[in-house]
Image (cartoon, rainbow, N blue to C red):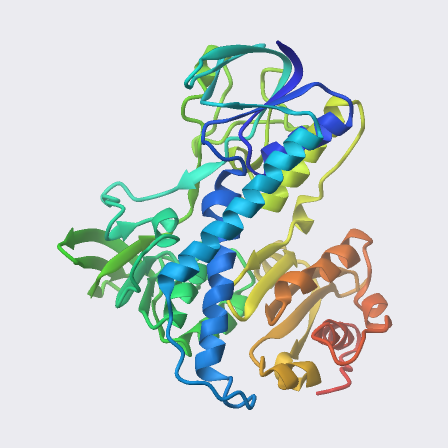
Length: 464
């Protein structure tokens, strides 16, 4: 059978690309190596981690804040097995939703490893090997967890995020190598259940890709959960013996430390996954990091083959992959879509949540750009006092001359949802004054955005 376009990989980038291609009238096929659709995000990433984060946050609140709210209960007990079971149910329902969308849009689904025979022929391995003839191909095979050469991931005591989502016991002491998004989220899951969490980070800040103010504030909040941090430390040895793991690290000052626990989560990032594609059969080139090289249209050096998401440059985010999938589909259809990569927001689903869009203060300093800053603390919000979510702040960066918003950084309750306001404002090149003059409902967390913009534009916040 011949297709107009075939997508290899069914994660957020792949399935969205398939749906958009089908909507635009193309005969579309999608190939997925696993039994379920949805890729890392739906199966072992975004969706299951958020399910566990929500469950453990409910438990944490029951144990710590219910009494002050006037809710009298016996001391709550955690049931990790039930949390995992509920998480699996959320994953199944979400993956089933992708099956429904494939059927609705008349997209043919093939299960097996897709590899290039030539630029117009894809071989699909599996129970029933077959070949697909196709005009265009979109590679959307995503990423896998990275490790270090000297670390042996045994998937029992030395684990990745995949195994951390399915532990059947609460660790006594989990050592996390890497203080980025994944490490902080999964550390929060187990800290709320009573685990001691130690984070070892090579750089001098956690969530180092975000504005440094966010990292400092998140570190303060998570210390209340019992997190311990070794920043500016390089891990050089990880071993497991029986039920104990040992992590050895050295600080930039030369001080050495050995940390012992019962689990070690390696969360130092992810790497592009192109195994099995047989890219050599079509001559597609990759860079030193293993990313497929593409032009501004996400086209590889083979003109009918495109690549999106984690296998190409840029942030490894599900919503970035979705935008790229849409861009490629519309480009193939002859439209002229665009993506402003600066305005792809990043989110950390700890509590408080962290969300960011645009430039960080560090980037603006590096550029030598003149800017002004305005911030507003959650503790000054009536809504935050009512909900007992006092940790956090909104930080707005604006051009010193034009007042155009250059970056918005939020740590606090519902930051993940609130950042959309920053994206919208920046897409329309709004000034801080524009946002400050808009009416924001009271009492809401969004009032902090208005106040931070007031602080940035004329240094005149109302409530501090």
